Image 1 (cartoon, rainbow, N blue to C red):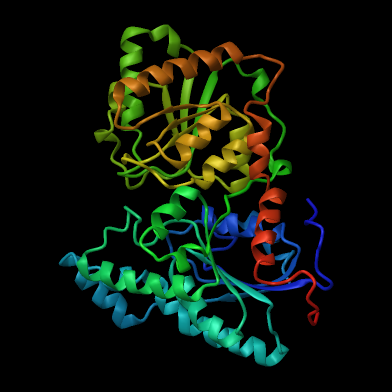
Image 2 (spheres, rainbow, N blue to C red):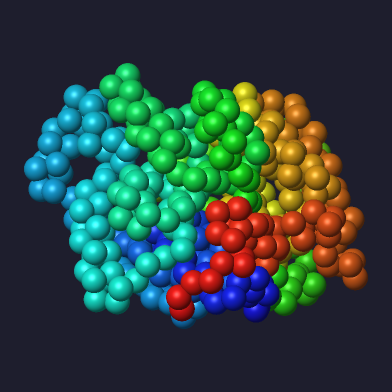
Length: 431
């Protein structure tokens, strides 16, 4: 897909920093790559080159460097003494090095040396810089690079920092991170979040001068990345969940609902299969109620590469979102945006908030993970719809006007408007 039409006399020189980038096979890497691909800019990217053993690689994503001006892959190596002290600290429930703000803080000096060497060799000077967190250490590197480059800085957040409920800060690490976040918010020229709810939550504690920096930019999908559908020849109704499951994001509420439906209306589940694709290594299936539902109703598959995941979405009869219980959720799952691109019916077991609103906007089905009767009723309606739709000539689902907002070229145009606030399109720069 071509990049958006340029407004600039010469290409905008963009410096981007993201620890995660393909071939890392995780949502952050893929979303950063997609945004940079569709920008009309000459982008120099600095990213990681020594991913942890638990990070998955997708060698099919190597082309993610092709549209960049350059890519500096900088190896991360944590100090030996920190690794040893972290292990000891974990035994006593102290996670200082891993949460100040995260283990990647030790990447900073290596990145700064690599950038200094590159700029000396090439006389490189960007017009604008953007850092992508998480990890939030990327933004701490941004603090130093802003001083070096003396150019406008956009700090992009995929998740909240202090208010992230999955971080489990103690009093000490929370105090440290409050100070770090404040430094970033004060120094960045604009701050970007993936949902309005996240922006409102994070920025509420700041004065207007900082709140005014906030902008919203959602995740994106590429329509031409989805392969043709294959499901027309399949009699079975398949609902797929793609992504990892763990203690907080558990399928237990779904399994309880399926058990109740099977007990009262087994015919509704005849010919239906729920398929989970992803890692479940940190989840104890024995504690989810999996053994209490009929054999074959739910199956599990291991993680697949990204292109295969898009094909599986398109080949589904329905797609499933599961989020952790909460009073309100501000998270916009990137997998939900991928689901939108597949144009298949979506059901979300998710708290009220960002994902709930979006699924409703699309015309989908939603239920709170803490409300068993609501899940059961919603699930019945969803399955009945899928069965009635089976074999229909109309294979696309969802409201096009909502889907178009998340097309990669449209999201890139939104980011161009953000950049235009800081760099005038009429300015003349060196190529």
